[in-house]
Length: 210
Ligand SMILES: Nc1nc2c(ncn2[C@@H]2O[C@H](COP(=O)(O)OP(=O)(O)OP(=O)(O)O)[C@@H](O)[C@H]2O)c(=O)[nH]1
Ligand SMILES: [Zn+2]
Image (cartoon, rainbow, N blue to C red; front, side):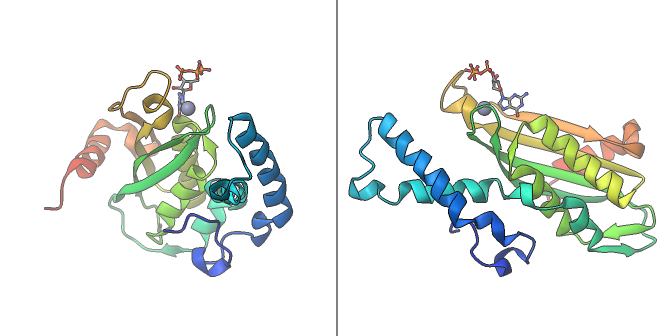
């Protein structure tokens, strides 16, 4: 996938405000990156680096485009009255975020469940909500709570469960340099406070289809 910030609204269903890809902002961020390249001992005028500051500026805007999106609005856009009252689980949602301490990626999977209370939500909206909170500077714990709170407050279900498992590059490529550690965070509301419900969710997210 091309990682440049989408130039047209179609690519992400019109949810991103076009002013996020502001040429003035790109130019300003790029100017800083030209300085940074120099400070790192590079020659920003060599051929391979000529467009790098601009590419980085666009990539950073893409990686933080969640700031421009309203997750509650996106959920509200696809809520349907339905009497279904069993747990709905969307698991293995890819997560790509940036840790707010080092601005290095952390990535992995999110598993989200809710128990409807008269309304269900369009399934694709759950990964969209995950993305909106992931595509900004984050800590994994806050992201987990924000996803839970957004679904609870907007959809008002009987309960919400969120489990996120991520690898943090700031712990792999530098610092403590642990290549295999995975961080798991979780957040629950309502019915998921009960061990039985929580265990059913945990069983479903660890079960394999094959
Ligand atoms: N709780 C939490 N910590 C995170 C997350 N992402 C990165 N960190 C941690 O943020 C901490 C920042 O600690 P500092 O001591 O200020 O920074 P540092 O000197 O670069 O730390 P080291 O990574 O241990 O070298 C580190 O322990 C990181 O592992 C996250 O999502 N949640
Ligand atoms: Zn970090």
